[in-house]
Figure (cartoon, rainbow, N blue to C red):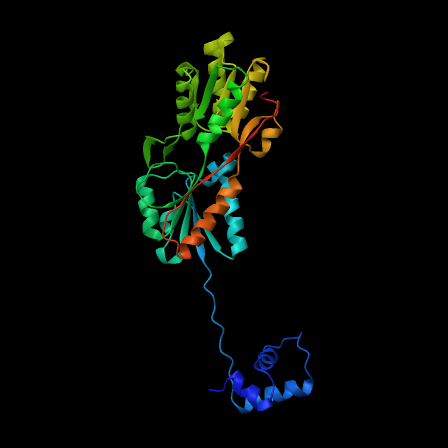
Length: 330
């Protein structure tokens, strides 16, 4: 079979010139006569261009522990997903999206890896790892013996940072309003590093008061209801500050305090977590711990790419947060 080198020898030009002419490189400066000779030589030698090997496009599955409706109610997980999808687009990776109630439709041979966003039971993790060799878990804090990649938020440092902020002002009466989650296929409560750290920190300083701790769902209406309950139960003895598990809860807390005529931050300070887009527009503007959710999704894609590139050792990334002080705290 004739090669580019054979054509170059016959026409007495370089191999590079032959290659560029046969690939119709418009930037090449060569006479029409030379081009004609190259094409004629290629035809006389029965030269055939080799078919370029097509690069297989990778496909990543993104599995949510929320339903589509729940995702719309909690922008935290939507932001993680969007960060992952944007990184996939940049890397030329195809994305297929599943929710945990329909991931069984996935076929093992259809995906190169899975990014699982949220909290999943042991049974669900086993199912994921049957469907793909490589799985990255995002925002799943459950202890596991498996050597898997994870992207987590450093909620220990974030919570300590908020409590340090309160204590530095001489505030010792600190309440907690958080969410209690469980797996969709298992009613066992999921551990929350925010609540665990809150308990450990205030216990260490002998400031923990169980009667100032409230839990519900991570939703605006629950924040509203729980703060109303706290107001009814404690009245003038209400804590001087509240650490709230996420911004949705905190927005509900602010509404309840405003309705009750409780001055924020003069009487009660409130700090949430996540820094969702509406946080700066509520009244007063919400102080919060900024979680870089988009980056969490990006890092998950990068970890999966590394695994497919041959990395053997599992990684757990803890992303830092930033305390954003606005009107609801000093």
